Length: 386
Ligand code: SF4
Ligand code: SF4
Image (cartoon, rainbow, N blue to C red; front, side):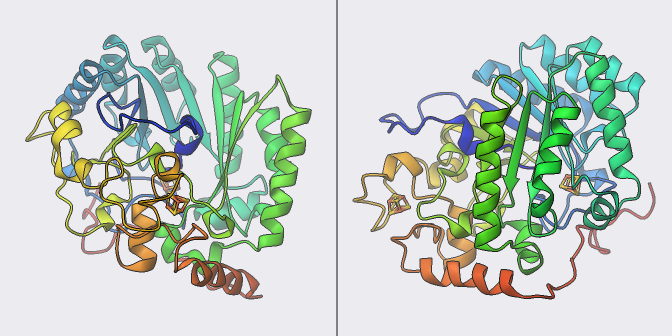
C-alpha cells in the first residue's frame, strides 16, 4: 500500500470543531497480501494473514456503514487489493452506496478484462504505484521481476477505458535522481495527477530508513524539479508533493489531524485513526465485527486519544499552529521520542528536532547504505500454502 498524501487534502485554516463531522475518506486495506516486497511499505511489520481477513459480506457491510456515516471516498487498498477475488463484489456495493471509489494498486496482478469489469461496476478512479522507471532499479526496489512493463500495460488499459489515473511515486535515495523521468512517465501514461511522495518513515520504511534516506541537497533539488514541472504541466497534470519530514521545519498535519478526516480499516477489521497508529501503546482499536463504524469514529478510545488539541503538551499547547498541524504525527513522536504526546520531532521547536535531523544527515551521507529488509510476511505468520 502506498501513501494517499493526506496532508494535501485538508485546508491550512484553523478549525474550531475538530471531530463533530464525518470523515472524508476511508482507507480499506482489503488484504496485506502483495506480490511485491517494497522496503518502504506502510503496512505493519506484522502482516495480517489471509485466513483472518474480513469476508466479502463484512467488507460490503463496511461500505454501507461508511456511506451512512457520511464518508465520501473509499480508497481500496492493501497490500494489493486485486488479489482478492471478491474485489468486484465489494466495489459493486460501494458504488451502489454512493461512495467515490479509488483503487490503489501496484497493477501487476490486474488484467484488462478485470479492469473493464470494475469500470462497468462503477469504479471511479485508479491509483497506480510505481517503484521507478528504470527496469533494473524498479526490480531491485520491489523484489519483483518485470513489474514496470506490466505497469505500462495497466496505464495503457486505464487510458483506453477512459478512467482517471493517478501515478503514485514513493521517492527515496534509490530513485530520487530519476524524478524527471518519473514525471515524464506519468505524462506518457496520461495521468491527471501524480503523487511525488517522499517516503514517510513508519513501519517498513522506518526499518529501512538508513537505506532509503536521501540527502538534503537531493530533496531540495527534487522540490525545484517538482515546482518547474508543475508550471510546465499546468492544466495537464496536478502534483501532490509530500515533503520529507526529516528536512522540514514544521510538521505536516498528519492525516489532516488525528481522528479528524480519515479512518483506516485493516484486513482483519481493526479501525485505526491512521495506518501506523498500532505502533502507539495504550490505544484500543475497535473492530468492525464488534462495533458500528459510526460509534468507533465518534467514541472509540483510539480516535479520542489524540483528537483535537486538549491532549497537547508544550510547546504545542500554546503554539499558534496547534490547530493547523495538530502537533504533527503521533506515530513519529512515539517512534523517535518514546512518547506519542510529544511534539513531532519534525518541528523545529521540539527538543528532539536536532537529533532527528542529524539522523537523516548522517544516514544519507553514508556512501554504502545497508541492504534492504524486504517487506515479507514473517515466517511464523505466513500461511502454509495459498
Ligand atoms: S509491498 Fe509495495 S506494492 Fe505491495 S502494498 Fe507494500 S508498498 Fe504497495
Ligand atoms: S510546536 Fe507543535 S503546534 Fe507548534 S508548529 Fe511545532 S508541532 Fe506544530
